[in-house]
Amino acid sequence: MNKTIELMLNRRSVRTYADKPIADDEKKAIFDCAMRAPTAGNMMLYSMIEITSQDVKDKLAVSCDNQPFIAKAPLVVLFVADFQRMFDYYRYSGAQAWSKQEGIEFTEPQEGDLLLAVNDALIAAQSAVTAAESLGIGSCYIGDIMEQFEYHKELFELPDFVFPVTLLCFGYPKTDGPKTPVPRYDEKYVHFENTYKRFGAEELLHMADRLEKWQYKGTPPEYKGGNIGIHIYARKYATEYAKEMNRSVRVALKAWSKEQ
Ligand SMILES: Cc1cc2nc3c(=O)[nH]c(=O)nc-3n(C[C@H](O)[C@H](O)[C@H](O)COP(=O)(O)O)c2cc1C
Image (tube, rainbow, N blue to C red; front, side, top):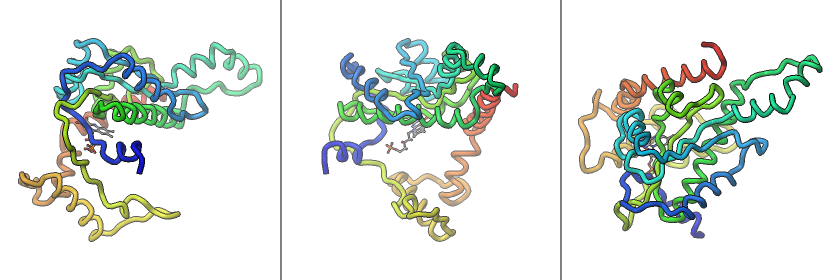
């Protein structure tokens, strides 16, 4: 084992932050590492918006499904999938005129471009996470940034070909000392050889039960619906935030494909 692997195997999300700012050189290292991440065609189909305004952090703590710790994070960065920059560049470089001359349709960013840009944004984000971790700085992803698309689009002045993929909160952990990584499903459920493996009832029930029981150890909740599977489903789908995320992403996809 080496230090990088040890670091990655012990990482866990950090949601309570010490009252200690992140120094400029640490911040620079985090952003530099994000920008060294692999990127499709070296096009850097993402942008990073550092939120320095406390007012905006406060707004995000509410708009991202009421998660107050966002407002307390010393460093908050929005990672957006960004095809706007490349598309504008194509136009300025004369690609539109060239297409016309060649009788080729000049296409706006498509669904594939969106997924590619989402990949780029997330790979850069995870590089930032690992860099921060190596400096002793914890982090937590906020997927709820995909909710309330119209609100976030206006708040950050996002053009149509920019989609807010994830928000990252960074900060020194409030408590140091040993931290136990959150367990994952057994490797056999996620690591296959050559072809996809689909599981049956017995294996899947075992897979999820084991993990959820660990997560709820000490204070087992009253399982909604009587079992863990229904409990997770209820938490993930029968909630307002889950409905809002799907509604919001649908609107974003329409904006991207100009259907609205
Ligand atoms: C895409 C994504 C979205 C997430 N959104 C949130 C979030 O909105 N709030 C939060 O507290 N944690 C969020 N997390 C953190 C996960 O809850 C966390 O990674 C998971 O429970 C496993 O714990 P660990 O990271 O400590 O191993 C998110 C993680 C990912 C990858």
